[in-house]
Image (spheres, chains in turn purple, green):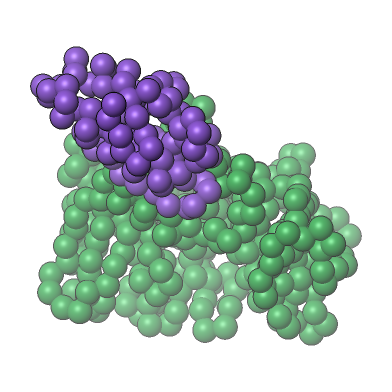
Length: 100
Length: 316
């Protein structure tokens, strides 16, 4: 089982409703209404955000990513867990057992 | 006494106070401006600072020694004047923060900037006070462009995500040195004085209710050298819009913030934003305006011809 600060491939993650985002050609802009912080997400990060439009497990996120990108499963899982872990820390996504 | 009827920001305004800054209008009023009593404190206030208080459907703006203004429900503005206050100053805050609070209650996005009309829409100049927004708008007016806004540019976003400018009062407010820089002399009709600044009429009538927003320029200072123009994209563009909002502190609630940030994102999607750094160099001001005029026309692929001005405005 892969771990990343409590987050696993079986963790279900969903977007925090108190945020707003838009696709601005070069990058996706995201703003947290709670913290007032905003972020720019390019390339894969933007695609991951898009794929999280519906709640899903990190594992299923990786299923989609390996189909779209030329990346090995192991590496994909490690990096997805790390990135989603950051999103949880920033309060942009919630995960079961952890409040966003 | 009957009301004065005006048109601005796509709204019909009926006012007990005469406001020469606004264009005449007609029809059933959308907004009423009344003289009356405004309390010192709002009972249901949830956020405040020295000059404003926010309550669920009301915003109180306080200009010390001048007046208190209460904007409520997006359609009513009450003005409580301090005895002996200078009329021009009463109107300064009325048409600035007072009307600003009201327009925000109506869900408009307000940017701190001036706005001119070009052939295919509107161009906005952003930047903090003293950066040259009004001077630039007036310089473009001299080249045949309509000025749609001077200090506050009001925007609305359609369901399809397109941003439109709603033209505001038809004057610019300039300091004496800006007037001489532009060689204006007596050419533009003065409307009123506000302290050191003079208000000059730049539009005869209210014009269209809305004009599509095409691009924005944020003006920044530099010490010396040639002006530079660069593009802002993505999150930098979004950040720039947030930094140039008019009275963002008047947004009290999360739903209001969500709506506003959504509008900023729509603007970021539909309009181009450029950063312009220029030395405040009088000698080369005309060349700087040339540079901007060229930039305005080059990128859109179509020349940014000035809108033909209607009669009723004086030629320069």
